[in-house]
Image 1 (tube, rainbow, N blue to C red):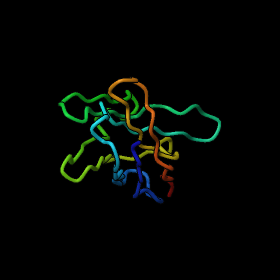
Image 2 (tube, helix red, strand yellow):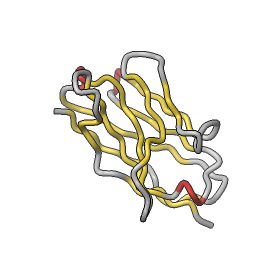
Image 3 (cartoon, one colour):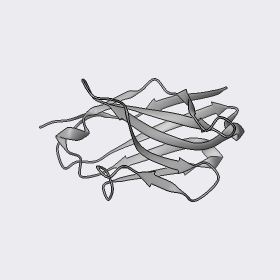
Image 4 (cartoon, helix red, strand yellow):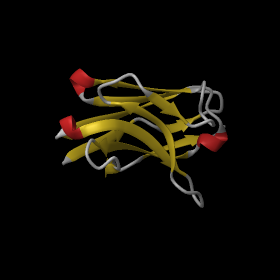
Length: 119
C-alpha cells in the first residue's frame, strides 16, 4: 500500500501562483509514476501532470503546459505541483495519485485539496 497526503491549495487570485505537495509513505518502491489529477463540479476527473518516480519523463495536459510544473523529491518521498499564471478555470479539487509498477493503473489516491482561483 501507498499512502498519499496532499497539502497546499486554497484561494488564489487570477494570475497568481500556488504550490501543492503530496507526501507519500508506505511501499513507494512499487510506484512507477505519480500524477496530479483535478476535478471540478460537473466535469470528469482529468490528468493534469505526471512524472516518473525514478526517471525523467513528464506529461502535461495541454491546458496547463507552460504554466504548471510537476517535480518530485525522492529523498523526501514528496511530489509537487507548482502552478503559475492561474486562471479561474483551474479551480478544482486536486488529487495526487500513484501508478503501480505492475498494474500500470493509478491505484493509490490522496484525499484531495481544493484550489480556488477567484478575485
